[in-house]
Length: 404
Image 1: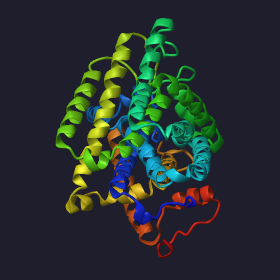
Image 2: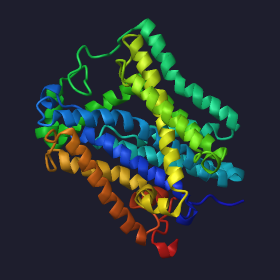
Image 3: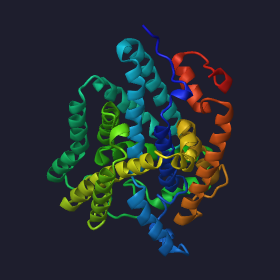
Image 4: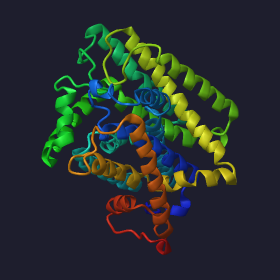
């Protein structure tokens, strides 16, 4: 019986790495709104931006092309990654799962550390949901698809119930910022991030952590992440990336449904992160959620189609390298964001407009591509990938390429 061991870099599926790197780009475009303060700044300040029309255009484009699409892809990739590891160890499940549970445990530990400094951490949630998700690893593909569908619509069912029982539960009376809390004004919340000490910033961040975990209920994020984990596992079990991801017909369907439903969602009022006050909120979530999934699949199909050619692989080579270091890339983005924006760094919190921070995000990502390419010339894994693997297997694993 073969003992479970970490995959060598040569065993990786490159299009999956490219998709993972692409998802990392979308994640920084979304997360930089938090580090920069734009997500929490009072609208009264935002309205004084000198190029407000450009910023509003960028905000709307972000809502259509970026918002929720990349965490969807990243979550699908989690399920895909588990399948690739599990399928090699299917005949040795007890030993493999013992190792994988340890892997998930360390992921949650990394998440707790990350969360202490920034409330938007996703690692702890992934580890938590992952422990539930892997219990369904032996289900038949058709059953997995049904399970994913049920989990995806459960939040909408909860919203319908909440609308009947307690409409507008915990919804702020007036929206004063992109993200408005019930217990503190945008001015009070942003003050520590502008001028506070290290510990004042930490206290404000822990306040945001508390509300982030409450927001998991109205957003349905836990159910959706679980659904995407299962769906990613299902896609790999049915050879989706070999047989179906490059279908032009499928791509057209994804694009039409994705853009169509997303556009329709913008015609009604609503928020993904709040319980409904009326039926328009539920309609918004319904349209936007299904638009989100279809656009995510459209992105996957586009990248898979491009990657079929040698020229396409050259175009996407930067995505591939960042994807191979996705764990290091994700956490380093937070470190860079904190250094640039927080008061114990360069202190640029709430000093830049939306188009400026999004341009900065692209610049940071370009630097990450260069660093990833340089690093992986000498090493098989990113530094945090290596640490995670070493902790999981209880020994220092070889890292340099001549040991691969």
